[in-house]
Image 1 (tube, rainbow, N blue to C red):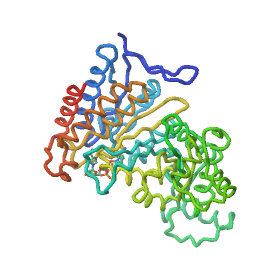
Image 2 (image 1 turned 45 degrees about the horizontal axis):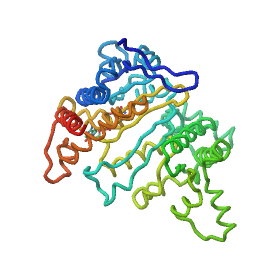
Image 3 (image 1 turned 180 degrees about the horizontal axis):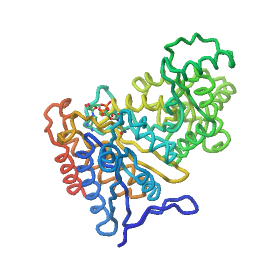
Image 4 (image 1 turned 45 degrees about the vertical axis):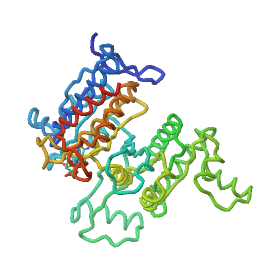
Length: 425
Ligand code: NAD
């Protein structure tokens, strides 16, 4: 069986060969430890699910410190070309080069392949230590816009000629009433209609596909009206113009309420009125951060801008066990390009200690297998991981918060997942 690339059919569906080439970036810091445990879990799951009928041929591509050591470049063009050719890849965390001319390798990869959705599912696995009483109430999927916002790094340093020039331009030519000083640094926030709409479109399509009850547009439009406020408006516009039969917006709810004389809404009433449609609602970002603790069951799919999404995903991850178990994917749903990755960083203090939790990369691999349509292998991994946690055989991050747990190394935790996958089948 010859190994081959994933391709896209002319109708837009992914075509995944039985012996598929998947490029991987091993990552810096704790990356190699975590990758070694994860890849064994992936291979065992695929073999257990499909025998010899399906297989992954892993193809290493270089980025980060390893790339710099071997090629003198942090992100070689060959790496981007290989990922582009094979459509789907998975990566470990990467160091942010200091003074290397690249602000962040992750941001550079997302920009190069125009991976406009950062998708981060957040759910609780029974047995995972949590700081809240009902972590099981959290079951959300974040769709974070990945290519725009203040995150693009258009910034001018305090005291620079550029910052002074931009400040003067804003005062003199744009009549901006603001007292720029010699030490004012300036950052630019960019939000476009097409960027917002493609992100919200992907979130709504996901909600419809996965039978999720709602999409919440999380924004700070009360203050930043033309960027975050416009994001909200464009989000509703997508729902009303492209998904009119499948969605129910808050504006429609308000009209129904007015017609029936109803005074207030709650999640149950909304659902009843929407009758099977996806409810599109919006919430201001600071309020949302308290709602995820107070009323998490009111939220399912979250569509939000880049910076909000960054904060929200870590806050939600903390509720369900921390960044050691938080998976993610960067996806362009049009081209099919997708790079799956843990949401945490390189935790350099723990490099080569074989001690950190590999679950983020393992669950990112689960997302990847689901994206490829290899759901059976994905389910095996989830069940094996769940069982390892229920048996309290865990890595240090969970062990420290558990009574009566057994402390495992990263590699041993991978073995434990494989053992449970075999036992459960
Ligand atoms: P970090 O996520 O690397 O680590 C913060 C802390 O989280 C660690 O000290 C550790 O206690 C805990 N942690 C992280 N991963 C864990 C795991 N798998 N299991 C258990 N605990 C875990 O954040 P940082 O220290 O702010 O960043 C270190 C480097 O990583 C920086 O260079 C940063 O730019 C980079 N970074 C990369 C990515 C990425 O590649 N996607 C994301 C964030 C940060």
